[in-house]
Figure 1: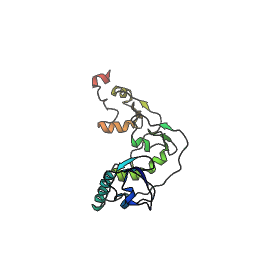
Figure 2 (figure 1 turned 60 degrees about the horizontal axis):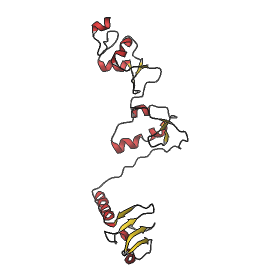
Figure 3 (figure 1 turned 180 degrees about the horizontal axis):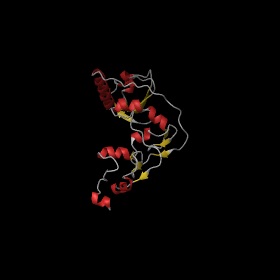
Figure 4 (figure 1 turned 60 degrees about the vertical axis):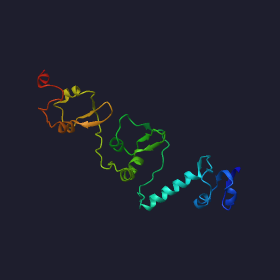
Amino acid sequence: MQETAVFHPGASIAQMRTAKVVRLEPGVTTAQVLQLHNDQMLETKNGRRISVGQYRQLQQLMAAVHSNGAKRHTVRYPIFAGTKAAGTPLKPGETPEQILARPDTDVIRLKTGHSVTAKQMKALVPYVEQTYGVKLHGARPMPNGPATHISKVADLKPLKNAPDSTIVESPKGTRVTLGELRRGFGKTPPHATIPGVSPMQEAK
């Protein structure tokens, strides 16, 4: 057997069947490839190789998927021009809700090194929701404005009489209002107790 043969449209199948490695050229059909021996190797232009046997199994798997009525997901969404700005990395622990609450002009640098605007991220929400079955649209926006940083429950004690609109921020950057916290604890000011702090400690 010859070592390598270039499989181009119009090439002799009989000749291709005598090569150990068959280098595929554009225009060669699946039907032509499946006429080769299972132990022959197929090589694409980028140098990747796969045996004809493996290729045949992939084709059989795809045919089985289509025969079972698999449906393609089609989602329409706008495509915006890319950004040349470097952007800033996502904050540690930043949630999808927080990202979607950013201004459209914010530039975000992804872990891959690519930069996208918040507007581009928001445009992908319908696709992500439909394809992965997650709920992103309509997420609670992050409160904006000055915030009091807290690292432990005791840090809330000085805020027990602060208005519900007061914003607190966790070490991971998550923001909530005191009103949301109080509703979560089932308490309302001015008689709300601070979780982890006894009434005697509050009196002190």
